[in-house]
Image (tube, rainbow, N blue to C red; front, side, top):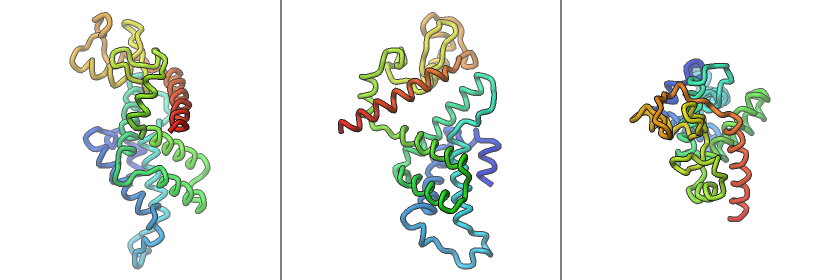
Length: 229
């Protein structure tokens, strides 16, 4: 049911009020189904209680994909921004769950799903993509400082001097800012911070090419950083 609902109406599950608790619950159950003790997970009369760990694992990992990757549907710019922000919030919540989250857990789940032919190649690819997003989100503060010191100026938010992950253009001044930064600014003052022109969230323009460029640069630089450690 959760897999169905998360595909049909993902936004309520990505809301800031519930996302951390939901992510912790998903991670805990993934640990039970694919963790070190998964082989000892037994229920008497499994058929009677409709308990099938393999099906549960397949359904559970579908929830991660539904909430952690874009749908690919065409939608207005404002809706696309909202979707991206919701996805980033969910990915971060999954990665920040210190109790149960680990990259090894997703690797094990992918192995089981592939070996048991529980998902097709496309579904496995999308789950692997989500797992990599989580891995990237769990960058420690030292790595982030390294990235910000190495980043070209146009990769940094002009007000916060932090590395952007979701850049958007402000059409009123043609400046580029991090989405979360400008949204926070507009909550208190609905004007462009650079020229005071009226500005609203639905006017912000996503920059998918710059976002991809920053993500690829970040991945290369993180590899350099990790090689130095």
